[in-house]
Image (cartoon, rainbow, N blue to C red; front, side, top):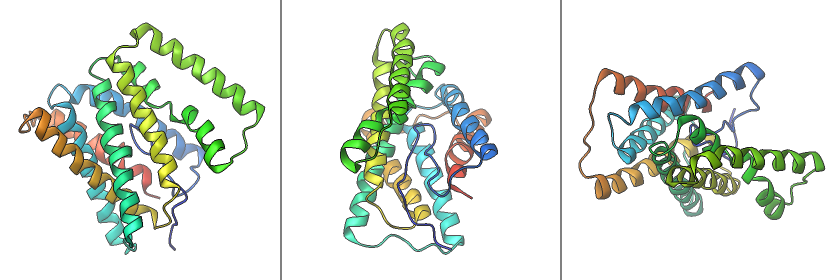
Length: 240
């Protein structure tokens, strides 16, 4: 049975699962996996430069998802417009979001970075109302207000430095990616896989230009962290 794309919402630590509405237990482990990714990435940055680490995560996650899509014989995306949207989505939702999120962890505590980088549920409300005419209830508006107050409480102690701005940039990129993804009607798994691969390639090019050849310490710790954030914290969230 084919899964049609209803919008590829994503989180900086790991994109949200558009394949189905998560059951409570599944949602708990996904939340744990995404949250723990920030701690894992913070440790992994001791062994790898920011952009190279982000690129490797995206490429591994995308490759794994495309492999599963192939095993499931999911139809690949077709059409110039579809591939253009996937490319734009990859650049915004992966290249910008992952790059900013990894960079934000360099100058910000893990907890603050995870909160700020995952602010897209708050940021998406008004654009969704404006563009897609989604209804906003008073309760939702109140919740958004409380949420923004919480963001200010988290950002204030950090001094609104580079780390905080990068984390918020990541959240804004994910918000834009969510809106872009609503234009896609192809099967979800190949779209997600390709957008990770394309975004990862762009990140790798940016890394080569700004960080030079990959100076990575391929320790057992780093390999384990890379596999965790790529496969468990990213790719696995889309499989069901």
